[in-house]
Amino acid sequence: MWRDSGAPTDSFYQVRPECGDVPKTRFKIKAGKTLSARKWEAAFTQEGYLDLSKTLSRIQCGGIHPSIRGEVWEFLLGCFDPKSTFDERDKLRLRRREQYARWREECREMDPIVGSGRIITAPIITEDGEPIKDPLALLQANPEGLQASGRPENSELSPTSKSQENASNGLQPNISNRLEKVEFANRVPLDKKVIQWKLTLHQIGLDVVRTDRTLVFYEKQEHLSKLWDILAVYAWVDKDVGYGQGMSDLCSPMIVLLEDEGDAFWCFERLMRRLRGNFRCTESTVGVESQLNSLASITQVLDPKLHQHLETLGGGDYLFAFRMLMVLFRREFSFGDSLFLWEMMWALEYDPEIFSMYEELGPGSEKSDGSKEKPKSARQCGKYERENMRNGGNNPETNLPISVFLVASVLKNESPKLLQEARGLDDVVKILNDITGNLDAKKACSGAMKLHKKYLKKAKKT
View 1: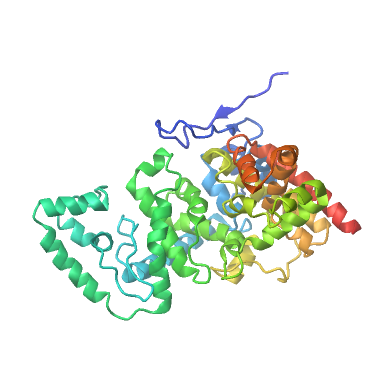
View 2 (view 1 turned 90 degrees about the vertical axis):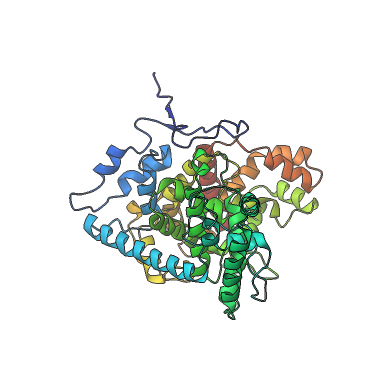
């Protein structure tokens, strides 16, 4: 029987030609399996109401066509209510864009680099709130001073080369005068929250320039600055969590998929509702620790021999799985395959009440374990969510994200190798690093679902 081998998707997320060691994308567009634009449009009524149940199974099996991926993600992540009309969503989108613009302007007033098309990669302030006097930091913090050199606004010279060129052209004193004025203005005592926010700006910049650098898309300065702006604004809006390393990996796909900066921000904000707990850290605990503890419990139940071996090696805290949970396997898959994995996960976890729940809580918050859930139709839920509903809803075992079972599935597959070859934690890390580019996203999700079902059965017996 003839089978469709699928159309490649390389043209949608082009890799720079000099980056030859990037994992190949396995995801292919398959007729009858991948959610197409035609099938997506057919799921809406004339008024705009969406029956998402018609599309979930297709996403779970074959992913989403790249041409409609951003639009579908907005529903999967809870940006929009499927029970709303086209007109209602258009109005909500406009209100959100305006809200993002207000937040960005608020940030720009605190630091003029926000929204300027540039990014900060050097510290601009001390922990005491004093401005950094380093010329590189001052130059980055004053885009107007840079333009005084006669360099076009969209120039992509490095800060160092800009400084050198200004000096050679005899313009350095003029810029220095301007920077002194900026420095004087910055001497106004700053609120602690403002100081904390300003302290993160250069770290965001350092992460942004390293994020998905193999993509042709990020050769453009405007895309880098858009990513930096969104992360800077988010760090200000969500003051409890702020910015944490790894967020740039989570936000980057939103920039690629959604052209409007405001839309990309809200899609990222919705994703962070699921993940912000992982980034909430104290002096004694790491936010993702609870998921690592759950991973340890799952492995102990499903593969006790492996769990015992990892404990003997000193890896009972499962910190070697930290990265997989923090950035949802972005480093283990190619860019295209990580998007395929994410949309399968979200389709499996889909809860039809996600929109109303997030709207009720407001930005910078997440669902609490004790929150009351409204009755919902199992038909409108993803397969993973339906399984949880059948097994008790608010039970701690049924509140775990599918990502924990994805990691458990990877460990299960690598169990023979880990048992035979791992003689220390370095070996564990090396074996898990070797899976990069060798994982199949669909098989990983399938394995996670099987382990989830098996774990719930065993948990019921104990």
